[in-house]
Image (cartoon, rainbow, N blue to C red; front, side, top):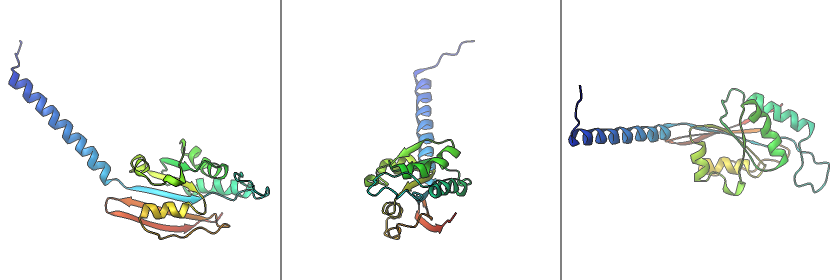
Length: 179
């Protein structure tokens, strides 16, 4: 049996298809709006200070152990993305968590922290961000939209800033996690 579709029937199907597509995409958009984004921000672990003037030192043994400890601490955080500045000490601090979660290590520019592209790429995810004594607090403040945290003391490698962003705003907590 052959049923012939009229132009009206075809048009009705197209309109229904377009309405379905719009509702579906609006649903995805709404779903993304309702998602919770959690940022875990840490300063790099202890760096090697043996060579005076070294602008890009690696971690000390203590720093390497702390980086592994951060991976343990964050093992239940379901990390989706790991960001680091492009320095040896930050990459070495971030790498154990990235490796543990089978993730790529992304680089970020501290001069462009929390821009629209970063917000879009991380929305609805659990994200580790590794920075420095003068950028980690600034990044947390930028996400919060206020100056809540001051610069980290140069001998402090134990701060964990947890910043949660929802459609109603951002909240944070600062923890001290020693080895």
